[in-house]
Length: 175
View (cartoon, helix red, strand yellow):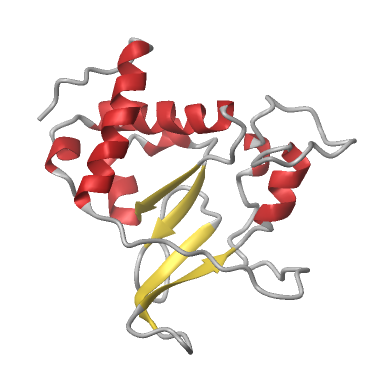
């Protein structure tokens, strides 16, 4: 946890997350919160973020994230042939490319005949159950992340804080 983030209240952190994800959606992309279950439970007012999808990081045999999650990162010590060292392993519960295509997000043209919504694709975000999906793709998709440093997070936080301040939502003068 970053000191500048911990200096905020749960309400301020929640508002920063909401503003960031809404900004991502307004730009035409699928917004998703990546966070540890502990962070969601103890550092956010997660009920105020319920319309957003979650990529929950919780290592072990069970995820207890209180929000519906579309992806569960269950280990950071996985092994993959051809990759040296440990890798994160995730269980995916949604067909994300299909959701993005249907909602017209991430550069896709919106599919005809989709149910009405707010245009963000958010109505697609919540899984009915956290059950793994069987992809129709011939090859599994790969999600490559990292390495990420504290500096990367601070740059992202400052960008979000500046945008939130422009909207009059949260203060940016936190340590």
